[in-house]
Length: 121
Image (cartoon, rainbow, N blue to C red):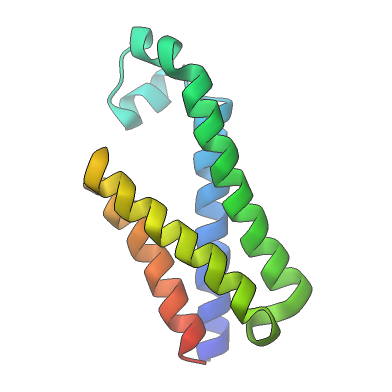
């Protein structure tokens, strides 16, 4: 049961980061994304390249998690998964401290939960 929960948590974190990637790389200027991030059309236009770069990094986090889980599994891939989940947590803490406290709950907390479940195996 614990392995299933840990695997599901890792997949959910990866899927979240794929979603962040899509928002930041491809949908940054859309009205729905602007509402979600609380930005104006002018700001979205001016920051689109920066957002796309951030989205690319989110894609790398998702890819690393899916690679580690798919290629090695939870036990053999623990080091890889720990590294990428650690990156998720650190990025979430930094984002919460510098951009929006909401990032703590959207990014850092799920990453920390997945990391805790992984190490509880």
